[in-house]
Image (cartoon, rainbow, N blue to C red):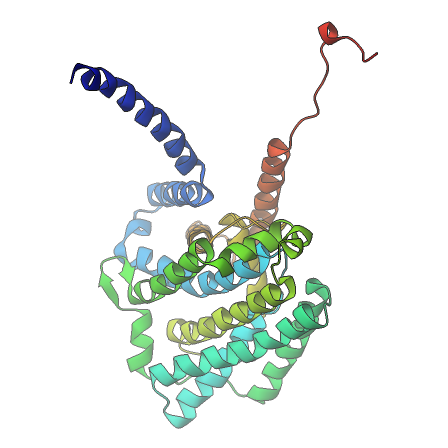
Length: 349
């Protein structure tokens, strides 16, 4: 009994030692750092303009970030496998246009619209998957080509028209909240983020994506079907972009032939800010959401200080560069340094 009592402080100390590094690792996670940055942006913006903290504006920031969050989620799957998809914005635009015309001209309801948007995204993502996973074209070349094809098809499908009559029963989802500051769109999207995070963290498929992105050659030697994994990531990116097209309709109540053409950079920026590395093997689903909320909050803050919208793409580009520089410095720190022999060790005989 006495020995057990004497052992208790040692056990407690060991637990505290283990807990310390865990808390340090948690505080250093990119999602946590981005969340802290969001708080800073909101605090500074509220100090400048008190309305920034209003429930209506916070709800707008969350709702505005959902489209980019879905695009960044799909982009993250591709980037984790050390790929890139430059066509997610165009896929989103095609989904928004086709689904929008079905709603506008044929009275399609929400659930069939979601199913149609997902199907369009999968079909177009399959084009990227075939080019990268089967014909083995470099991802940047393949997806740049499909971006041009899909963007051109947007003009063909619209034929000079645009989607501008979406019923209130659908668009109300973009403005209603479940509680002050929490839009329905955010609550509806969270299950998708959680499922994606579970797949990446706890399934064999998710671990295989990380392995391929970390070292494709080693993954192949370990028996992982590298090309099949890459194929799947582009299909998933297409699915996420197709769903983003439906969310875009709900949030903006319309679509045109240029919808999505400028959202590729935003999707990549949100993924990078959220911690997904261009070099593959590092990142996650919640980082995509955090990065998109930070992007939306920052751009909204700029509009509150009367920065013109034409500067927004430049601002997104700066954030991309900062995220890449941050990652590259972090990778440099993690690289092992060569051992230097001290004078006492002498020279080898």
